[in-house]
Amino acid sequence: MSDYTLTKTRFREGIWQGLLSGPADGQPEISVTLEGAAVRAVTLAAMGAPGQWALDVPVPVEAVGDGVQTFMIHETGSHEMLDSFTLIAGEALGSDFRAEMSLLRAELDMLKRAFRRHCLETGE
Image (cartoon, rainbow, N blue to C red; front, top):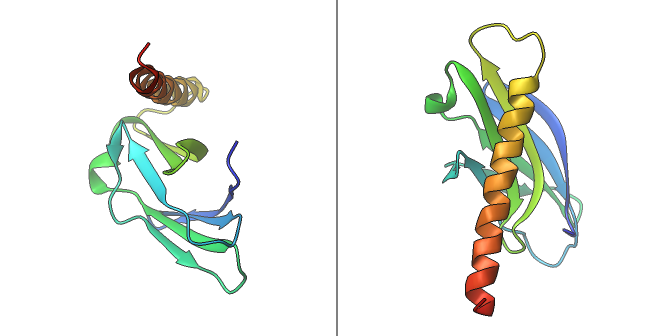
């Protein structure tokens, strides 16, 4: 379980923003992925209070198009998923079933990578 909590504050003009709270002993490392690839230009800036940071995740232009895109936000050190958000474009959806499936696929990929890393580290 991560020591950090991420709360979405808004999603506007192509930038997802959140408030990261946690231990004040140094700035955490955060990574954001889309289909397993790192999202660039993610910023984490210290707020006025200790243990609080503003996170900005710009949505890359290549992610805008038909279909479902799920962004996963992780604490780099512990590989813990802090949050995710989904972008849906194109044909109107009767429900968000495709978004849920996309999130499940992304989480399954994350678990597979963690399991493989564990097997390599333990030699099993």
